Image 1: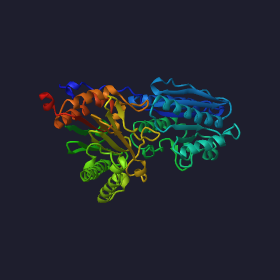
Image 2: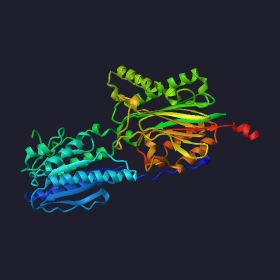
Image 3: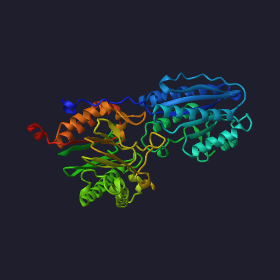
Length: 228
Length: 266
């Protein structure tokens, strides 16, 4: 076969970094999650990793950071692409410092964006995903952090989702959630279904060439209670 | 003395799989031997009829540019030269393309957002080039010193999947004008689908090893049809298909100060 450009040779492609889609999970690991809930949550995160790995492009684009809050706030995994992610086994214990977790999540995301910009990495709108079965126990910190998360969602700096597990204070979660994205209540312990939904949604965004606001996310009825 | 130039576009693998049409479109005209006019448009993936929008925008932009250079023969050498600069050359182009989008929208009785598209329009003469850029299309030129220049940065939002469209209310204000004074014997314009393989993200710098073979090729032929075949074959090559699943449009232009047979005759 003749070369497309005759004697000119073939164009050599530049090796640009992949676009990235950052996702931060804020996971409740307080004492009340002990037992089946914690086990199912861990299994859900592992399922999320597997679902993303099926898609070669998404596995290079989706970057996950995991922050757990139970007794203390811990950055369990700093941002790493899914192909390099070792899924953690979280253990439950202590109270629910949700405000501190939100604050750390927001700071981690902003720091990551700065890294992307310096390295010339193009990125998609970040996801901040909060899962809890309780209410914040770290004082008024959550109000200020929630306000920042809501503002960030409003101005398109991230997409902020909140999910309440059985026992969660849905009223407070309603105050934490972004105005256009009210909290969802998990059916039973359907963490795997939740994370399947999250992986499908994140893949859809990370492979899209369309305005993030126009990406249609799949329905949540497989895992969330309707009418909460 | 003339331009050798061609443009082609192809449907990306993503759209082939989903059954969506190719939403990129481009056209060139050479109103006289000195001038090359062109326009490329990239229909928004989120807009169901954006392929029609891309077509309408390109036709409208080129029609107005052609009429303008026909009325003002002084623009032949450096199209954006003279009074008013690029502002005068491209005056009313965005509005004309928007009107064309509105016409198509009303014919189909659909909102104009369904036809959302970017637009890149340019005019090139032997002593200067200029382009109007709305969205993430781009134009690279080699200057007289041999450096590859990106005229303006592709307009992206903060996020990888956001850009500017003709259907935006402030499109006329958002459009950027760029000008290069002096000879630019090689031109390459493309839609966003090709940026990831040809423009270094760090600093939006043209990747010279991508452009050099294209430059050598277009500089060595005076046959537009041969150029078109080569672009077409490149856009459909396995190597490129493996690197970009998006629709792409690519234009190459080469300016030859002396016709090949005249050069041979010495």
